[in-house]
Amino acid sequence: MWSIVLPSLAMIAVTYVLARFSFGLFLPDIAVSLDLSEADGGFIGALAFASYTFALVVSSRFIRHFGQFNVVLTAGMSAIIGMLGIAFSPSFPYLAIAVFIAGLGSGLASPVLSQVAYAKLPSNQLDQANTWINSGTSIGLIITGPVVLLFSEHWRLSYLIFTIIGIIVLIWTARSISSDQNKMNQATQISNWGSVLASAKYLLVSSFIIGSSSSIYWTFSKSYLTSVPFTTANENIVFWMVMGIAGILGGLAGGVIQKIGLTWSHRLALLIMLASPIILLLPSRIAIYASASMFGSSYIFLTGLFIVLATRIFQSFPSLGVSLSFLALGIGQSIGSFFAGKTIELTSYPFAFILFAAIGIIALFIPVEKRMAKGKPRRLNGSV
Image (cartoon, rainbow, N blue to C red; front, side, top):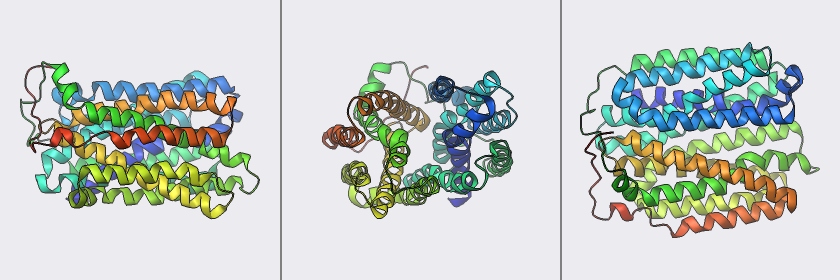
């Protein structure tokens, strides 16, 4: 199992964090170097989300037509080319194009790596494998933290380092994942999208709500910390790293799900995630790092749970379920970030954090395991 999990985990770290999320950490220094306005930075951030969304939408079709091996290579290459482009960007247009290319890899990686796990591993290892692969986001957070601390002003060098890491990971992954299709078969087509969406409705609704509720933490937790008097810039980076270290615990999701079931795993992780922004408001460094630990571990746990549920519903083509779930999650985060910013502007950070935690409570009442009540995963037929 680990011969597939470890390189796949590393690919998630590269595509999600090094190539996509790290841009926000370096944006202040990039903006100074390239004379970018706030609007320029916001536009580029939106491009990263747009490329991620586009890749999620086309990933299943790409996997079916080009094969999982080629799509894995495409995900890695887009991240590498994008990061290299960022490192050498002389101005706003070049930077925007590079960030767009870099963002494509994250949208391709999760769906195709879930398909790789399905093709390469026995069914009794799939839950644990998928949740450990998903925890690669945490590894990426851990890597970027020290780089930002040491080289925040040297962002071009940082992206060159990230590019080298990306090349090593891509070679490792390509050697570990052969080009044969194994369990990929022709029962990976659908003709009735209404039936498909109906079978995944609880998964998609939960993904959307949790994306919306978590968006304020991802987008504004660091901004909030800069507004309180007892934290420093370096402590904010440590906050990011603690979130990543704790997220590794999310890799345990597969084992927990097997022990207590999807429903209770979902509720437990969700309660921890919803408590994290409340804890963040307490005037204490211990509370801040406790909050980061709670959010990092629970968020990675929940996204891993979504992957497990998606692979069970779409048994013959799990990448489609993962694409739909992460698309709903991303749309929720995009909409949530917009309204979170407006809420903070009109009220205050504490009120906004509490409000978005309350919104997440809705997801506690979603019967995520109901689709699995008869114990038979869905198989797909028809044509895409």
